[in-house]
Length: 307
Image (cartoon, rainbow, N blue to C red; front, side, top):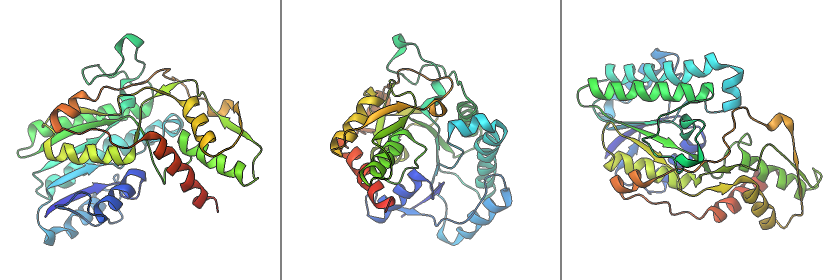
């Protein structure tokens, strides 16, 4: 068995990862038990890693933990940089003290590309990042930090994943499609008028089911090339308004969309679609989950959560 350390196990993707391993979807990996830790408190990281000593060496790390909400990054950029950059440094240092010499997958974000002109779509990894918010700045900085460690630390195999938008059950209501599912359930239950409060929904995004995101991460652990950056995306451009409309139709609800100024974000990119050919070429990964089925699952998940 190979021992896998995952930060952010209690987050959206982390919970899905735990469930997938428990279901035997990725045999051969033993998930190192989660222990309360703080990326800004190195001693807590040391305590977590030291506790795992009897299990043997850590073979791989997926670093999911961080401050991921863009509006929060604007409200408190210092905290975002501390958690996402300094916290990553603390993790790398703790792993070095533990004698780590394995695969380190840093989970960044497709948001690092910033404002991308239509002629540069779909977005490839060769496009230089132009971050337009503190969150994206922190992710680019942490990417470079991790890649530098991969160059200078013997035995370290460091890779970077840049996931684009992903969705699935259990996602926080601060994310657009999860929020729409929550509102639709509230409308169905008579707790909200048949009006969806939305931000700017006449934009396109590249959405991927969280299960496909996880499959990409494990494919990278197995076959990704050291020092490389990989887009994790569907390769398809989808209008957010159309996806909301599809979800409402699936729910058999007649609703109206009303724009709420407080939901609008600064530095909004109008169109987003990524290129996943590098990931496919290096690992053989392909997205396998239908987005419509994922939307239905998210909607029904909120039925349980709103009871």
